[in-house]
Every structure is written in structure tokens, then in C-alpha cells.
Length: 565
Image (cartoon, rainbow, N blue to C red; front, side, top):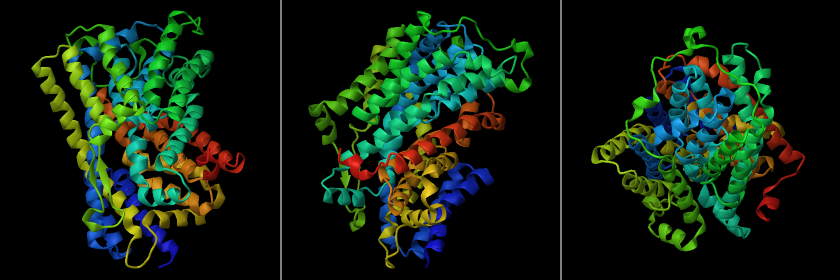
């Protein structure tokens, strides 16, 4: 069978997912089981992968899924803990009193606080937290959703304490084969992965520098009385300052510490610096900008859900106590990754599965304490006592978190295994290359040397379809890596481009728009949001594509010079 046909067959699961999810608007819980079955059939009938290997790959995927769900559970559990303890209300109220200027509020709440929440929790929680807050202090509901979606960009690759990279990229790559090749060159997997993390941080920090300005200009153009771009541009110095307050510590963390911390540390440091700057009137505008009076708003700006800060909880909690869990989380995460005795202890509890069902190179492991989920659960438990929560609060926290997991889990138990089947399809009775390699060969033949420019867009398409940076990375990381190998380019940089593009794609991911819209009562009007969020998405994909293209062909970046440093 020639490579063109193989490439089309290999693309079929991804194309089918797009058709079902977007074309037929089928819910992911219905679409992904269908795609999983089709993937199994393609692997069995056309690649002639044995039934046992398909089954082993499925089991491997399910074990990886447990790790993903453990992280999601910990992240959501901490957020729910803070909701029921009254900490979220305290944090929200504090933001609303810092500045009356809506341009400053959107940067502070959506950009800085949203980026921090993304780093700590991920999985769409920034919109769930930030959107109701903005509505509560006077933002139109549709604008709150737009801004909540726009922050699903720069921090997302390092969201949920690094899940899109730790689970998405590492789970999406053929780790066993790549490790074997690296060891022949005297290079460890950790070094290879750290380079990818650093490249993701560098590209994001460049693209993210203009995101606060885009937030403000889109607000003044689409939601201002004068429909003016210049009213947003007038805050240019402050917007760039706020961006750099996040991206610089974000970049440093990504390069020198690891994938768990950039968005968390960037958000915390940025919030501290910018809040102090606002109170000191540093670079803040002399004029004050606000939305038109609410009685002049078009009906499309309103949501069906009325959000009030006072209605969230009656509990009162100090600012210090409200912020303590997040600060303590950041401290524990850094300590667990940098203090060797603690690192070794956490890693000592490791459930390993080697050569599942006796199939070569099909391994999986689950580190219950070292994975961010374990640390998040520990912080949640400590918070129960520090915030003096009662049994009903604890019960509601666990119940709400479990409910979220059940919803996410059903989709992932099909998505992750189908990705593993595709990756493991290279061992078959016909000596046919694996499905990701077949896709890569077809794509490289079609686009040739210009492909790097479109690499982030491929990642964005994956996120648009799946509604997740992590899932996009799981599906497409190996494909991007193989394409780079065929073109003779840096595999690490191409995988980094995949992750950056997948983060940008979150801004237009239908699943995320629906979830964000639901928090403020805007279900059914997702198209209004998408028509605006496509603007920053195109900006992000264009700039990141140019960066990747120049890195390959002007700077001459290769894996050899990256991994040897």
C-alpha cells in the first residue's frame, strides 16, 4: 500500500473526530467512542496490528488516563475547596476594589489572575472563575466570556501544573523508541523533554507579550461606547508592563525549573508587581474608561444568569488565608521538583506496568504522590483545616470534584487509548510504519519545507476539535516529531510548536466556549464569542508560525545544538 493511501487512512481518526464534533455537533462522549472503534479497525485491518497489541495499547492508554484524571481531580478539588471555604469570594472582592478603570480590571482579573488559575487548575477553570467575577463587578456577560476565552492561550501549555506537557507531550510521544535513540547519543530523556519545555516557554513569552493589549483593545472596540481601538491602545505602556510582569518570571521558570511552574509563578509574581504598580499609579492611565450604562447595552450582551459576589457564600475569610493555599501549592511544587530527598520519596511510590500483555515497548506507570494531583490533594486537605471547614463543605467539595471527573473521564478513556494504538501501530505483520509516521510522510510530501509555519495551526486544529491542549498533544505530538525528522529539522522545536498552537486553539475550542458561556448564562450564543476570539487566535498562530520558521531557517536551530548544550 503506497504512502498516500496510508497517510489518508492514518488521518481518518482525526478527520472523523472533526466531522462528528464540529460538523454533526455530536457530544464528545458520543463521538470519541466511535473514533476509538474506527481507529481499532484501521489498525487491525490495514496495519495488521495484532488484537493483543491493540488490547495492550488500550490498557496502556487507560493507565495514562488514570494519571490525567488524578491531576484533574486534584486541581478541581482545590478550586472547589476554596469555593466552599469562602476564599474565592474574598479573592474576587479584592480585585474589584483595586481600580475602577475597566482596562486595568480586565488585565488584572482576566490576564494575571486568570493565568495563575490556569497554572494551578487548568481545564477551563479560569473562565469558570474569572467570567462570573467580571459579570459580578459590571462587565457585560458576553465580554466576560470573550476575555475568559482569550486567557486560554499563553498560560495553557503549563496549565494544571504542566499537564499538557507532562501528560500530553510525554504521553503523545513514542517515549521508548525516542529514549533508545537518545541514549545512543548519550542523551537522557529528561534533557530532551526539558528542551521542549524551554522552547514552549520562549515562544509563548514572545507571543504572550501583546495579549493584555489585545484584551484591552478588543474590549474598547467591541464593548465600548465609541467602538474605538485607540481607547485601548492608549494604555499601551501599562499593558506591556503587565504582560512582561507575567512573561519574564514565566520564561525563567520554564527554562530553569520545569513545566509545572511557569503559569503559577508568572501569575503570582505578576499579580504582586502589577497590584503594587496600580496602587503607586505607575504607568496607569490618567483617564478612566468604562462600559456604556447598562441600560444602553444591546440584549445580546446580557446572560440569563445573575451573578452576585455576596450570593456565593456567607463565609468571611481574610485575604491572607484566602491566598495561602495557592502560595503553599507553589511552594510545595517547587520543593518537590528541586529538593532531591523529597523528590526521591515522592517518586518511590510508582506503580509500573512493563511490556503489558507481553507486548514490546508498551509500558506505563503511575506516580500517585509525585504527579501534581497528589500535591493538589494534600494542599486541599490542609486547607480544610486551615479554613476551618465543616463536614458538609468537605462533602460538597468531594462530590462536585468527583462529578467533574466522571464527565471528563468518560471522554478520556477512549481518547487516550486511541492515541496509543496509533503510536504503537508500528509493530505489525506487514512492517508498515506507524500511523503518526505515515501522517508525517504524507504531510511533508504535501507542504515540504514550508510546513513549520503551519505546525502551530495543526496543534490548534487538534485543540479546536478536542477542546483540550492536553488531548491535542496526545494525538499529534508524535506526528509533529516524525514530520520534523522527515524534513531534517529539530524534533523538539516542532513538538514545542505543536504545544503552543494547541494552547492558542483553546481560544476557539467549542467545548471551552460552551463551558465558559454556561457560567454566565450565555448558552446558545457561542457564535458571538467565536467571532471575536478568532482574532487573537489568528494573531497567535501567525506569530508563532513565523517564530518557528525563522528558528529553523534563519537561526539554524537543530536538535544537535540544542541537546548538546
